[in-house]
Image (cartoon, rainbow, N blue to C red; front, side):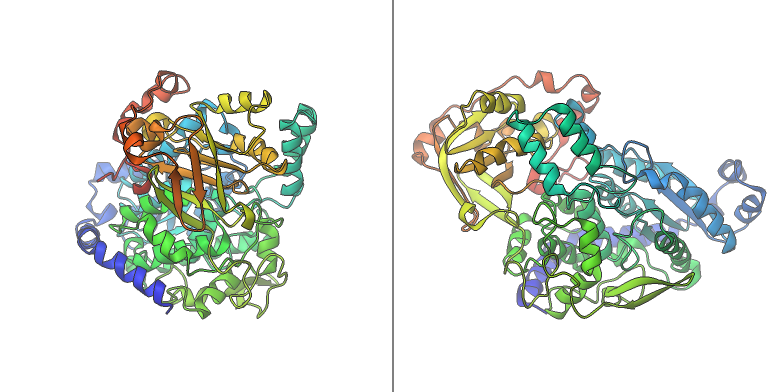
Length: 604
């Protein structure tokens, strides 16, 4: 095992000893006390199977067969989730074939950040993670189930579902992906048209045509943002079947993998003899593996929030310092847009997750003994699913990458270090995605220009006021201020400035999209401005340094003078009403800091 991996894992285990122990005791007690439908009264049970087919009713009346709870995030707003529309009936049919039953336990909300980007609805995005966790918990509260499958893919949905599932840690749980859409307009071309539009050199119709050619069919968007980072997590944490994350929807292999997942989940129930409760198989090693995977693939910055919150749900305490330490030890093995020109389909074709797991494992950078829902451990995930006629089998991972412009071995990485870094200094703690940043942009020093609204940045750009070296600071965008929205609509503007030769960086207590990264961005700054963070003391013209090499976020102002400044105030009222935002006042009041996962439910 790599010494850094070993050290960080030991550190997390020791830090989490008490909270993890409490969690494990709780789920063991839940297993002993919860007899599922055996404990239900006749009235309870009759309500539970009232709407089922007669065959299912007969099985549910007894106690010999397993009943599978389906938690689904299906809706028509997310292209990634649209294929799930027919999954419940498919799962019910497969369960019957196997002599068991399956029921939709409940649905969870699932919002598309692509639809809400730059709009008021985006301010509900991060909070929706915790709503999804609550919804998952409510779905499973019927206590009718011996195992669970979660149908979810996108940004907050998988983290929320996992948080909710870990509240029922005594139940075996498997996540079933639907896969990415086939490749459309290359992401680099879409980005080019967006930048032209930002400069006024392309019209709305041209932009819409490019967007529609990129997002064109059912399936996950093909760039490597938060949704596809989720899929990487689920596989490297052993909650998917091997090689299943990036198989396109509505294909024979996708169908075969879905069938195999259902067969497998019935094999790991308590009564089946290979009991694998999610709360036990997902442990400290699993989360270290997830962080390693994030660095090795250049994944989404949003997971510096989500992984912390997900781990806390299992009694495990991980910190940004753990991310940072692992970043210096883990090489970057993949170039997927925005870290390169390839999309996730090309990543999968080059070797995908099986290649990543084998390479990292061979270098001692993964806990290959970590628990999984399939096989003996993560060591069995360096395989490729293939169809032999109509039969699904798993073949050894090919020895070499099929395309080293997309996927490289540990011996010849794209970078010697990983994709995300921690920044610290008088302005607070922040993170930065460096896998997309050019070497000559790793340190940017320039005067700050302060904004409180995204539209103010856009207006200043259009007036030509940002045509210089500049650190664009957008504050009062943290979780307590307005839900910590993604600020991705600013990416084209900042990219235009950078391509014009200016030294540009972005600093915010908000988030950027998982698809952002080419402009240096110190994001998730904590403490946030609305909570008295140092960003509130910045003034226009202060010289700020974003230093991704040394991990610094500095301001060239005398410390005593800076501390004596009166923090800026702003009216946040307009963020708190309309589009349902008034319903989330209690979330804004209760939410914890960014480095604690921006957690509402488990905010210590």
